[in-house]
Length: 64
Image (cartoon, rainbow, N blue to C red):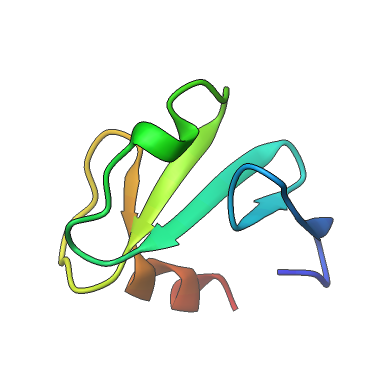
C-alpha cells in the first residue's frame, strides 16, 4: 500500500491510509474504538464477507 498511498500510524486506531482509518481485529472486534472517526473501517480476520464499514483481512491481499 505504501507504494501508491500514504500509510501512517494513528493514535486512535492501528493505521491510516491517506484519509481512511483502519482498525484491525478478530471476528469479534467491535466498532466502538473508531465510532467517532469519519472514514473509519474495521478490518476483521476470520470472516469471509465484508459489510458496512467492515472489511475482511484477506481483501487487503488483493490490493498488492
